[in-house]
Amino acid sequence: MDLKEKLADLRQQGLEDIENSQDLKRINEIRVKMLGKKGNLTGVLRGMRDISAEERPKVGQFANKVRDELTAAIEERHAALEQAALNEKLKAETIDVTLPGSPVAQGQPHVIQQIIDQVVDLFVSMGYEVAVGDEVEQEVYNFEKLNLPKDHPARDMQDTFYVTPSVLMRTQTSPMQARMLEKHDFAKGPLKMISPGKVYRRDTDDATHSHQFNQIEGMVVGKHITMADLKGTLKVVARSLFGDKLDVRLRPSYFPFTEPSVEADITCFNCMGKGCAICKHTGWIEVLGAGMVHPNVLKMSGVDPEEYGGFAFGLGPDRFAMLKYGVDDIRNFYQNDVRFLNQFDEKG
Ligand code: DAH
Image 1 (cartoon, rainbow, N blue to C red):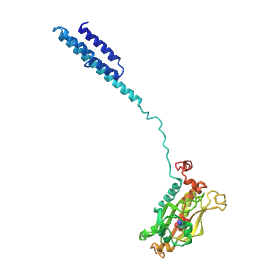
Image 2 (cartoon, helix red, strand yellow):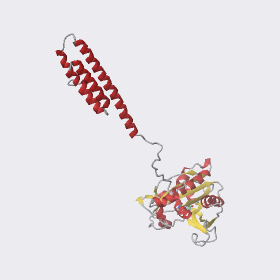
Image 3 (tube, protein in one colour):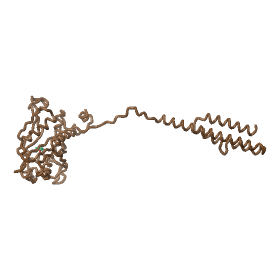
């Protein structure tokens, strides 16, 4: 076989191998085997020394042609295989955006927060300002300025956690009455405030008591404010939370910071006043404490009781939630069992 035939063979074999190669690894092997320094073409060309000077340029030309053809064929096949590999990868990694996603569980405000939000929204709609106080409070604001001097027997009911001898976890949201009275500029009009928040007592936890619970304090102080305003306001709250046709009644009571003081009852929303287990057959449910702000409280906060007066009330959203949803153990609210809490999904 002369050199030209060998080259033709090499070309034939090479093109076949290139054609049959199925992956990039194989085509690279072929490139090395055919065109590399120690490859077949170089091997054949070594035979050039032995041919005549006359033949050499022709064979040389042919050899160049074979090399160019093989190089072009390898490049073309390489590009095709690369594209195929890419297509394969794209296919394997395709994301079907039409598949349903994995649902993310969505929570909702805690049931007590829902009640707080409802009450606060209602008062904001009536022009009250929202005042959020601190859970750690000075004793003077928690007691003294609310007409509960040291050794007042009513302090016993609100025994609590002291941080220092004169600083404590507040037992009620009422300290915000004194704080807001001190701050308010009465020349600009009456003070109308609502103050939701957590309070603390040294209560032993049971079905109806918790050492930490919530209160919402309300107060209006201005000129010519009467108990009728208090009753009307409470009626609006009761009706918005428990139902349109409910009535409110006031019973005499005692709080050191109000005079006169009352407990407010609402018509039992379960039996509408006929008497049932929920209202202990009285037709009424006790919902909050209230009264006309005591002159001493006004005086201690620098407000003249001869000129200004008003009402205050304190309600318990935890108790409201228990009543509204028939929950018989307050501890359910604080144990954070989602099966319990999910029942009060305001989204329905
Ligand atoms: N602070 C009282 C308590 O914790 C509740 C209360 C009663 C607040 C009468 C008031 C009020 O503002 O007028 O028992």
